[in-house]
Length: 118
Length: 116
Image (tube, rainbow over all chains, first blue to last red; front, top):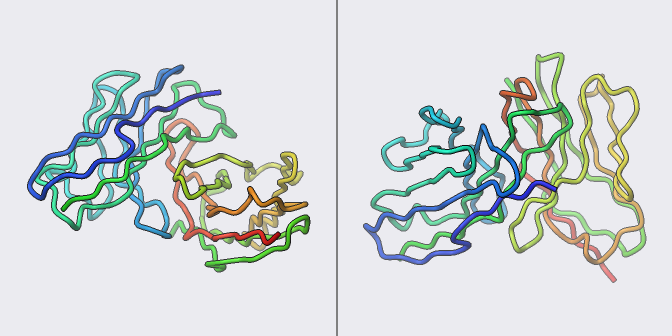
């Protein structure tokens, strides 16, 4: 089945550092990738949608300058948390969808990145 | 407004028994898709089952079945013969928009604990 790899799986860094999270589709071309944020025991909140080669579409309330998303190729999207602060600590999950989609095809999720800012 | 609601923050079930996890949705779209995902404590999202808005039959996948009641806008997940490994958080999700361009919105989740 379709596999999405997310790296790193966890990261701890100091306040003020910028952190980059990678999301790769390993066996399909992901025309669309999604980035979610999840607090403990809470729902997944969609942060942004990125289409290969174009600017990401951010959900209302998500700071574009804080969360930089790049989707430069059909297999790679990156989320950079710039000048991270403790309130940015969270679980970030990416999801990918291929170009040929069928209505019953689910999005394929990465395993998530646990980000802790000290 | 498009919305998914899961009203059960936590559920307990005895091993080998069946359990129903509730999900209601709100949309004005005629075409939509409903999904259930399982999230163990390790964090990965595992796809379980899908129901399309035009599907007349309830979806089934092994021990999972989806009780789809379109008029009530509900899409409850039924897990039969619960196993200890079923303990996890379960999310109901709805795809809004087309299958090519749409996005998933998630409910609040239900934490299921299976008792031995």
